[in-house]
Image 1 (tube, one colour):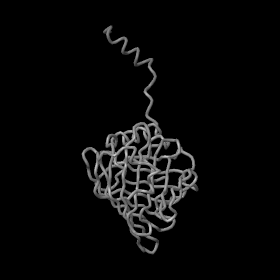
Image 2: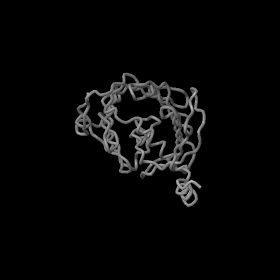
Image 3: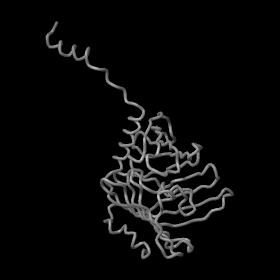
Length: 260
């Protein structure tokens, strides 16, 4: 026998077998890959139209300016300022996202002329009458969830998606679990199902009309349907701009009342 083959044969015989990736490990790996794909954009601004529809189809429309700041080693910061209609003009929402540490969120209500801090226990409540909860508005940091890979399947537009279950690891979530579809090519979120604390299907969020901005993808439309109430909220995004020079000073809770 060739003596050079002996050490290799010994390793093959006595080495433990390679362990297969568990569903938890695979789910986490894909979530981390999706997070890395969207790193490095620094800051962005955009305009948003929010369309609220009740069960009967009656609509109300709100127009909002949005700013976001990427924060290294922490969650992102975001600021939303309502311009229309008149009864909500000047309302401002500021979010400092974190990992397992509770997110910091403040809401300025011009009618009351005060800044209200959103308590952690109340973040499962609806944001400004929409089908988005306060906790939905924070950046989705990887460490906020525990993951389990479910399957791979077609998900429309000719795309294939990874389907992952994620369970909130932070306190006071309004959800028992979520099921997320991420496309296998660019790791864009496609669909997210929310389950309430009784494990009943509560809402579904879908992202459509993606566009590439350099290395980063953004959806022009997000549609949230509440299956239990029949209400929906559509977010239509436009005028994305990146690298506009925003800094932490532009996200100041003490300045919310003075924003225009």
